[in-house]
Image (cartoon, rainbow, N blue to C red; front, side, top):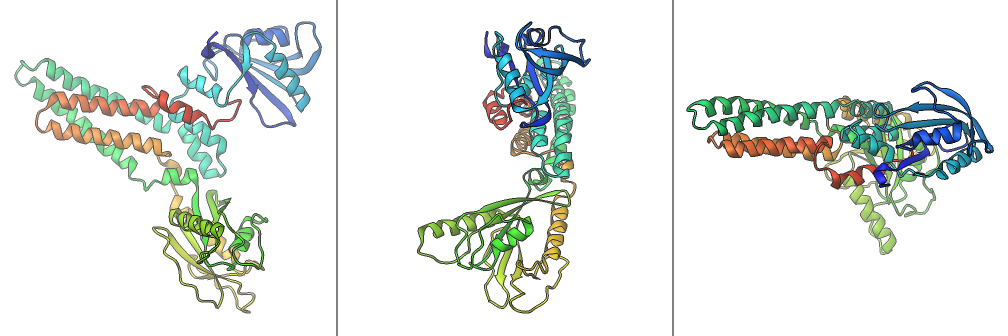
Length: 444
């Protein structure tokens, strides 16, 4: 039995102990698994209560609810069974062990259920990526974005574009076939180029979104930077509302970049606590400063934290916007001054003075930067690269079309359609499947 014909099983719900655990089975021997453990197969898509045994007439494993989904109308396109059992570790272990003793069954690998759904035409590749993003979504905006991809927002549009390109290619090739018919090639080339031009503009417009889709998926990156002992780690702890960074009165405590994920108004924000920027002879601190500069330059926003009353020039942070945050106003006996933009805020990370105003300013900045991003078609660099190649091929087709080169136009349209096929997984994607599925959890 080859691997794609194996019957796989796995725990498909959360880590035990839980109230109810779902164990899923998919493959040609799924019916055998149900008959072995539950005695008989229930009606399709109708829940049935059954006592699970490790073999017919054997020891009782657990009373369970059993569901049966015959292929191809199932999650994976194969025969699928689900056992809903009590969610204790011992129960789950016993049921999984019993399944493992059935001939032809083996434990699933990470993402293998979803991969079979893709290979059996139940999901296209953009929907698979949407499912992965939905699993790992941390905020409401990310959830909405992921669901749009899972529902086929990009995949359906890409397939519509591909169908139009194939029709345009057919027109051009028909013109080549009837080249001896006088004005026929010109009449066919014109409509094909018009289709290519319209698609080129539509796809280019989808790409002109300032990478908002990827930024929402990954989160707005905010680096907390500044000189040593300015209170950067204290500010991180205050914003995270827990101790995530070591705080001491000694300069240079932070040596590596610490990340904290926040949900600000349903938008994801990743805070980066970086090492204090200063000259040092300590090789470990030198590496920390190098990493701090690197992350600050890659961030969307830099909070440059300095001590109130101590002059410290703002360092160049590349393309990132920089807000100056003066900390330790409690030592200077000063009052926090709110700011509508967040720039020039004065706070006390120790007492919390001014921090609510800083959080509000960060939330407004996240909303202004990411608002509407969940509606973006493009949410991954893979999508963007594929669509850029489509636009480049259409540009070449239009340029050659003006010179009447029907053969080259047809080839460029074919290449454009092929890139759209790679986007959805219709053609030639074996080289990227392992990369996409490797981060899935077992049971999905």
